[in-house]
Length: 233
Length: 117
Image (tube, rainbow over all chains, first blue to last red; front, top):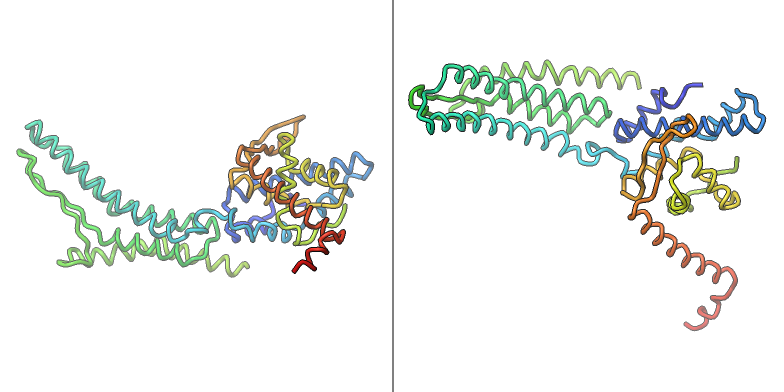
């Protein structure tokens, strides 16, 4: 008899009901342990092993009954199901903004330090700053969007908020421009943050290319996965 | 195995679970068994249905859960928190009032009230 822990349909039903994956796994394991206890008691009272196991399973319930016993409990729903707009949209967008601001201020802060010390900007600084800005512009939005897709897929979340979150993060990431101009000797200069969809529309074609890349790498696989799951169901 | 109780029992599983766990740290199977014994099989919680109740109580901070291995068997054990103890007392008090009211109504003792108005 298949244990509840490896029952894919039960797991999927629990996740679809909004139960967090870890809690779903714990529930499944506790149901298995309960059935084992019950079977042990039945064996002790003289039932043959297979009869005891079957009777224990039928007492604990079919996977549909167990899933239904959890489905109407709002308090067991994961955070991402109770507040999907926060988990999939506002949270990742806020995280992206915080990282952009942190990167810009980090560069400015280091430049101020060189000014205070009266030393010229070292050669490695331009490289480090480029890597930092490239990471924040190109890598972070993709990682955030991929994280949204993975969490949404793992939890069988309804697609609206995850898709909205992915698109906003990819759009902002693609539009984002981060640059610094520093005089090597005086460490004077400026750090600029720009968005391609705002005047004077810098690098607008690059914006479309980055957006298309992000959509192909994250959104399309997510939609394909969803289509596969729907077809299976 | 007895028949599980119908939906009008809503709220009772919580009280019974808290009452059983108040007697000491225990696990799901033992809770179901003890409820059956304590109520003389008048109340039989669905074998699998007790776990969502326990998880809800844990989520509300009324129970603490930890995995323990006893006699070679690993299970999740539940114990009451201070909040759980308060909740058990409050539910118990409420239930006593309901019971007293039902007793009065069923024994006809409340008939006088019908004529006062």
